[in-house]
Length: 294
Image (cartoon, rainbow, N blue to C red):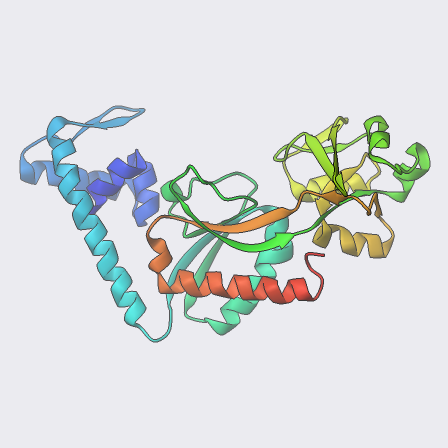
């Protein structure tokens, strides 16, 4: 009944299989067995989609309640244990993951040795409900998704280019100069750069010969002298110190990145997820005090 409820909620046998940690064949067997025992057809299945029969729709309402009760029972047992344990599946962007999240998880694992971690680094926005993800690290909350979110930290950004680029194109000294410059365009962000100073704001439409959906590639292209770019300060600082990047227009403020932990509704009561969220917030707070976000 729990597997049946997951098939309905995930929208396919394959997605349900990933969510509950079973093979697609086993999930299919459970559905067939259930239909055989009840002597009714619960699902209309085709090669591309599934849909509920009228009987299946009524049956799902009961199964959903049972599945939720089973989940809450497991959660209660988990929270009664003195030490949090179990698997946490985490997804985060590649560059932020390697530079920020993985170092944090290294320390977290040293403290909570019985919590298993499965870390998926991808710049794609993963459907955390379908993929069975416990926590997604994202640069913005998803207010209309039905998911829950907790702010972890705020990251400063800066405008950078390479010394070689500035030798060839000159250094911008005011926002209007930016219209004449090449940009390395990050496809997951807005194509408009917003700058502020005092009570005035400026907008610059970005154009350039290179675009990418990967933050690490964006930084590499900027270091390579192919254009300007707005990047997180934590990414820029070591390159500025090494002399491979230079920041410009530092007296103007740029849009900050709000980093959130996003998780499925109801899972915030999980002890292992709570300790991870609390740890990340404390970790980034300490890092910020040492200069990570500024």
